[in-house]
Image (cartoon, rainbow, N blue to C red; front, side, top):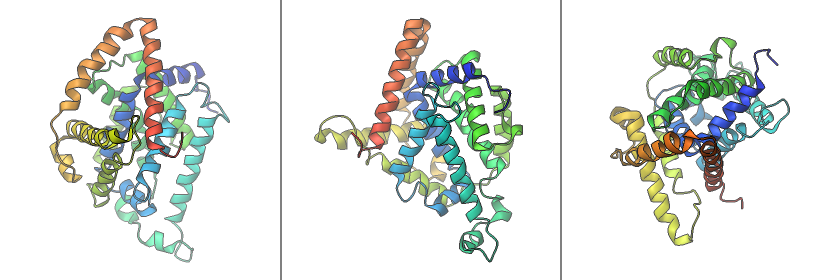
Length: 306
């Protein structure tokens, strides 16, 4: 364990992310996940491995379960549930990387030959890992602010430290682990300049995520499910249009929608976080609300579970 780990700050970061609730889930799905499909390389690896294309709903549920699990008290301490889950992800990444870089006489020669190392570099390389970490920490903060949620410096530092520890567990090189939000934004900018353009994999993955909204199981009677699924799909497209812009939406093959979702989220978040969240009791209520929303979203991706 590195000496820089501050457990109080890790727990504070988990509390902040729980308090973000639906906003964190929206940003991580839309701006981080679908927004990342705008660039080739990692997206092509996802398609090649079958991740997020064979069973999109289950894959999204696993990602959602992991991110929610990171925010549980004490879960990231050594041998805790989120600690084990994060190392499990690291091992899966290592196995995938190995299977796509086997020598020609290896059993996975087919994988090695269809991965363009000259174009995209090694699979799951450090630049890709740094970009992914940046989508979870710095992009999360910027996205929530764009939704009207204030993230003061103390909360920003706590969130960055939480994800710094997660990045260390994931095997991200220390050069890409930072405590300062703006240092992350600078790194993200440099990594962004080196990213490949959109490939065929991006639109395929993006459309799969949008289509998965109809497969979720929402609270309420059976007759309500199709209407709620349509609402969630339209809400997702509305927020994606605002977050990604017209050009990226067209590059990903997604239909454009007016920014009506932001129109109601901005005043709602202003009331929740700038008025109710000014008091200690209000912040506690926001934390309970965030936990309930996170669990409800996770349950909608896990229809087989009660």
